[in-house]
Length: 514
Image: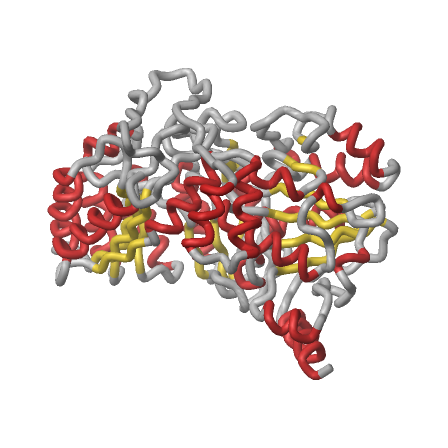
């Protein structure tokens, strides 16, 4: 059939442009699934790291699978979802291992299971079906909505756990395997056991995560990614990766980083929660740039920037400087323990201008608890000030409280409130700075999935089956009785934020008045 041939031909053309693809025959085969398209999945450092780890396991091999760009062609031609390396049907593999980065990728997981010819609900599968496993960044906060669809959850850093899983899966029958994994730290087996919200920690010997396959067909265009540090030494109240998660920040010596960069890599991305907190970051940047490579950094902290550091980024090809303010005003930044001041961000803008950069990108959030119009007006005033130094692009996201953070349980500000704040920003900055907001509606959907349990996963399935519109999501949450967890706190060893008030008559479930 012509459509099916074209699907395979498209995959083969992308494979031909890859460097570092692994192929191996082994008795236990894993379909490593990413519930977003190829260009997104191949930009995921964790996904690539697990791909390499499976191949390093003696009795196992991994082949990649992605959410197709053209789902309708698969359906129209009745083409079963197939792996990239061998174009073999996914349903024939022993294990489907999903890496789920964030809540809204649930729909992609459903679609991939459907295209594979597998029941979406775990309760409808049996020993004849592949084992369905899920891990990834989502497990650091709230993987509960995944429970109805997976046989096993791998929680936290998986570089060591994947070997434990493969060893057991290759030697045990399904029922015995599930009972066994339910007792192993780091795993959760829905309906059988396993600690909830456990975040496993990989051994230092497994660090750093790094790219296995370089391809031009990604968000980051042929960039080799590597982490000079894992975790964070800071305590921002909204962040899952703050200093109390997995022992804080673990740094990797620059010498090891440099030894792992392949000769053919012309672009290098340093990735992590707090890359500029690495004590030898400037030295590392300078050495990479001196080798003739371009370089980028994923997380720049304004209070750690120096003129020399910004100059090295410019030498490495950067034309924009990106920092995160994460609070519309100093009051909001103090509330979430974000250790940045206006003075430090202004200084960063001046460093960028001196280095010859063209634009300052600033990421921010709106809708934090206790935020008022005066805080938005302060952001307008401050962004205007920055724009006099360098053109500014302001990325704005509605605040979504995540589980296992000090802000866990904080309510969503409400669709109308968030949209009013965004409109206030647009009007106040018109002609002065570019405002790039993310959707308030989809932030609310993310909030519901982040703050609810397995019933929210079932609601996600209902919404997906109903076409995936916002109205479908809203209706599904209501029909499944989804209510966000309220005011749950994690042990953080420090003073906790104020308990967020629940305003009478404004239940979190109603997005129009949340």
